Image (cartoon, rainbow, N blue to C red):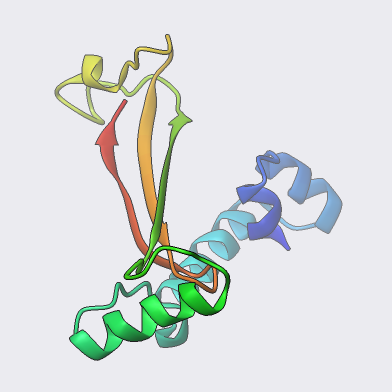
Length: 126
């Protein structure tokens, strides 16, 4: 619950008071839960690579109503607003300043016909 609240934008201080745990315990719960999710094989993000995997992905889109043959993923992106990075964070702070007037990270994702993420990139500055 602490991780979900943190990801939703709640301050750690809220979890401290609501759950009656220390600030350190909150950060430990966030870190350990995130790490456990990242290590779970069943949750790994994997874009289809082989011919059979690509055919199966395209078949899933067709079964779910896509009219275009050969579609193996739907792609979208968003600019996530972030605080201004410090000089310790990056050598090129200005690259994170977007044309929208704030600092951000570009996020790009691809989903399969079942709306599961098969590719995720969070590495390009604003």
